[in-house]
Amino acid sequence: MDTINAIILGIIQGLTEFLPVSSSGHIELGKAILGADIKEDMLFTVVLHVATALSTIVVFRKDILELLKGIFQFKWNEESKFAVKVIISMIPAAIVGVYFEDQLETLFEGNLLLVGSMLIITAILLYFADKAKNTNKKVSYSNAIVIGISQAIAILPGVSRSGATISTSVLLGNDKTKAARFSFLMVVPLIFGKIGKDIFSGELSLDNSQILPLSLGFVAAFIAGLFACTWMINLVKKSKLTYFSIYCLVVGLIAIGYVGYQTYF
Image (cartoon, rainbow, N blue to C red):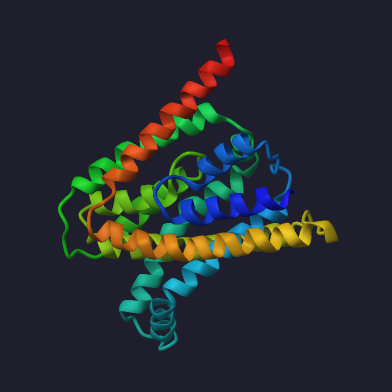
């Protein structure tokens, strides 16, 4: 992995993990533009996901501490209820990840037509979510299931995880700030679960030549993630998702147009 490419892809991962524009889709587009082949470099992917997970923990450190305090009181309080909703939301994505991992991996091989199409779907979701009225409603247990299904669908490259989950939550009538908070916190256990699975698979390997690019990619993703996560919360609160809807639409059309040009010319 080239050092410059590692930094650029780290920034892309950090920004797009939280901004509603699809991190997986942009990583595929970034690899295509840079000519970087990292589909076999599982370690690099794991490092970037650790970085973005840690940035989420830093931004929501107070919320996470309050949750842990509430849970360890061993009472059926608001924190325990929230934790159960997070667990419920994880189930669909966990099932898809465990039973369809091999099939999903084939989609992450420069399939720009799929990426472009899914970005357009993300754009439509964001547009309607941005037009929804804000409320004070909290995420319910049934909402958690539906949001979890949208998170599972967002495994597809080009569908924004944060965009899909926040949009789904808002369209279900939930408060926009609470929707963003739930969206970001619900993914942390899944990320660490996937990281643990990859580590114990025994397929990760490290040599000395990888240390510098991995380190720089990690730092780039972490810093970009801190910025993007904080920014995204404010954007959702102020109903500014239409800009990202337009962006996803434009990038999706460009990706599809690029595939058409490559095919016929």
